[in-house]
Image (cartoon, rainbow, N blue to C red):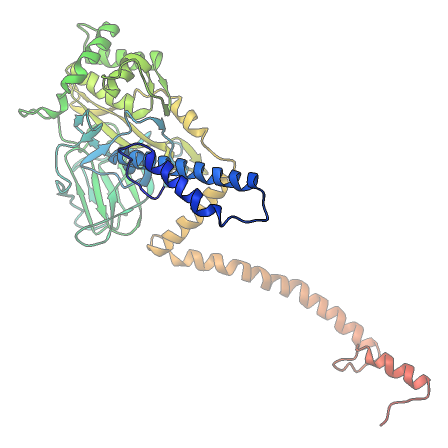
Length: 477
């Protein structure tokens, strides 16, 4: 099994090598064991060798077949504003970690946003199962901050939103220019202003991604509401990315459209029909098996026509392409779903990562969230929760407090008070109880005969001295 490369010939070399090893070891075998034991041990070694050389070759082929999609999921990199590599077409279980990545505290009790979007994309490549934003990774414009306060950033000028939420998120990436922590901010739809955000720089692109460079942990207030977003309107250029549909996906899309029977419907009726179609005829499933019915078809075609079950990336991609095929501009959005309460706020876990659709409303001239993934996906993902998740949450909370202190996102006075609390409790106990005890002991000693107590008075040698004295051997002066 020392040779990693596949054996292009026959197995003659392997079996010939086994014969030579048998010949060489025969005269050196141990005489303490019988021939059966020696032959059995040799057979085990030969079998392991055969499985080893076969297994290493298979492992090499498996690693070579693992593409960038699998590696991207395994290492969980930061969200890339330029592209989103999906898990569409991959066989196996899509399972994410229960690690808490975002914490929210709504300013109005119970008024938390449904989604926190990190980025959106326009161009789908079916061979790579990857969405592209249509611009480079450096295609960002600086966000202006308020003149009187450099921690207030204006995403949409002249808009005052009534809703606000405090968001705590980590910047897991690194800036190639400065080396500072960097990452995309998870923001509610319709965000217009960010406050208490002490970052070095803030940039955004035309598809709704906001890139921050600053401390490793940022805690800020996001003001948002229904209505306009800072995303660019649908592309009306020659490319028309927001209406672009890959040609090899068109037959499956037309088949589904014919099944929905929505000829002559307006945009609202089309969206209602698509939502009803997915909710009634599709199921959410994280496990994907190999489909042998349509080997030559694309993964999305098999999803629409055969399996009709998948995770959110299938639903979001299919919805975007269906809307486009019906003439409605649409984009693919990624971020997180907000649904788990924690105290007076909310926590967002890695398994809450979600993909959905942005649909263009022609009447209002705005982008709207349009999610066709069955609502059961939250409960299904929740089944991955472990009985020991509370320990992970406690560790996460401690790490969060340390990160707040490290990145100066909290006042040191709070931690000083927390540290002094047990000290003050001990002092209070000493003052109230110990002084009272000492007072009682002092009164008792005052009424009793004074007894001199010297160090070592309880030594057993004094008892020996007493016994010896009783036997006529007193201690010398």
